[in-house]
Amino acid sequence: MSASVTTPPRPSGPSPDPGRRPGELGLRELGRWTWRQLTSMRTALVLLLLLALAAVPGSVVPQENIDALAASRWKESHSTLAPIYERLGLFSVYETPWFAAIYLLLMISLVGCIIPRTLVYAKALRARPPRAPRNLTRLPDSTTYETDASPEEALAGAREVLKGRRYRVDTSPEDSEDRWVAAERGYLREAGNLLFHLSIIVVLVGFAMGSLLGYKGGVIVLVGNGFSNNLTQYDEFEPGSLFRSDWMEPFAFDVTDFDVEWLTSGPAAGQARKFVSHLSYTEEPGAEPQEYDLRVNHPLTIGKTDVFLIGHGYAPVITIRDGNGDVAWSGPSIFLPTDTSFRSFGVVKASDARPEQIGLQGELYPTFAFEGGKDGIGPYSSFGNAADPLISMTVWRGDLGMDDPGPQSVYVLDTSKAEQVTQADGSMFRLDLRPGEEAELPDGLGTVSFDGLQRWNKIQISQTPGKLVALGGVSLALVGLVGSLYIRPRRVWVRARRTGSGPEARTLVEIAGLDRAGGGDVASELAEVRTGIMGTAPAADDPGTDAGNQKEQSS
Image 1 (cartoon, rainbow, N blue to C red):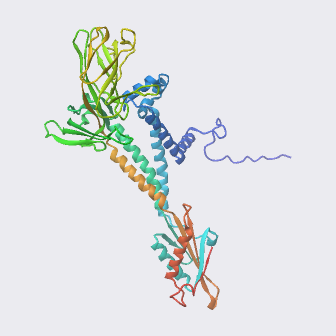
Image 2: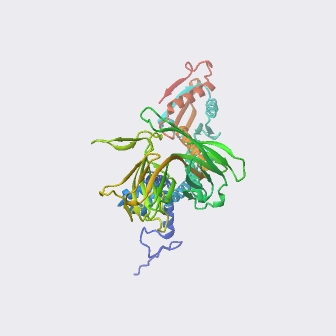
Image 3: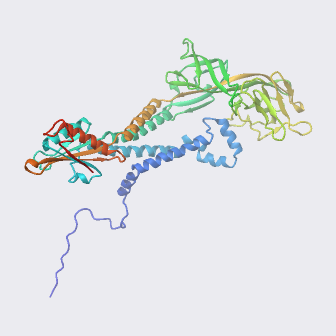
């Protein structure tokens, strides 16, 4: 006796890869899985948080493109951490590849998240409100009442009331035994959510436009001097990756005067309360000069370029004569404020001094004061105004690194190859000079005189093509946020059916609602809807009253 074996049919379609293990993803499946993970809302929120965290070092660590002196002094005082920070790019956070990677991934994630949600929302806008559930009274919020009006009159009144309350209304088919009205509103809530997420993309695009197509530069201008808008005039200049120098507008300005108001009482006494730089500017060569009072947060706009006043300070006029009696340096030296009383730090480099180069490094005290003793704070400036200015500086001799290749900051004195000047007994030599005073340097190195004091203004000049785009994005974010917070998506259903028979027959009206956002007061909404329906379909016996002809129940 033989047994026959039936071979099962071979499944149609491509056969599985025999070399793939169960659950292993191919290249296409892995790409789809990666894309779904990247474009999820959770990933977008994580990337947004990472972008915020990545910007923190830019606020904590001094940035070289913003304050080169602060960055240099931070490196000097943190010699161990400085090399690590430099490798991580923490002194120029916003130009690092890892910051750009987070930025781009966030853009991709938001776009990939918004597009599918927009398609779903567009489909929902065309959809009809869902039909009434079978048992309305089982919903958390519902109410019922009886009336002598017919079901058609009650439902007609429901349609009228709900349309008046800006609901989208749908009704049961005319041949249906189950007669109901379905209504829904609050569709703009999802539009607010989409608008808010879209606004983030708009803001990011605006910032990207400014970073790629714009520039930001800074210059310190002495009061009485001027500036013309070309690259050679800037102290610091940060162009965008796609910026071209021929986009710079050919304006020029002179700082003709500078006014400062100082606080003279209270805990902030000695600080500058208000300062104004008086400019005379021309928008192009040969144009008629114009006047403008430049103040903080009131920039001068010339074409697409904004000119900001962001700071001010003092420039001591110092003359250095070398050992041969020749003037090795003479002129104002920019000193940068280190506190609100304008105690300032600066350096002077006399590279032409002979027989050795001479460097000065120290502080300016606009209104000199001193508190000694065991708990004293030493020298300080008691007031920001130059009531009693004094400079206190140490002196260095030898190689100041001026002949070394590469740029060198004018606010930093390289003392690695130099020697500090001391007195005959070996103690530190320090210059303490008031305006008009002169001191002789040891070992016949020459003399130093403090000739006077000038003021300077720190001017920031920038082109930011995407600022209006970013502002529009912020405005869209506010509109979208208001919509998503205050628009409540709700659904309301009304069912009417005849109960009883003969003279005792009445119409039972069931009303139920659902707040899709949660936390809303649906009961009050249903009460108003019920009152409106009762008003449009009053009882047949006594149209003037509701209480005498209608029985009401709530659950």
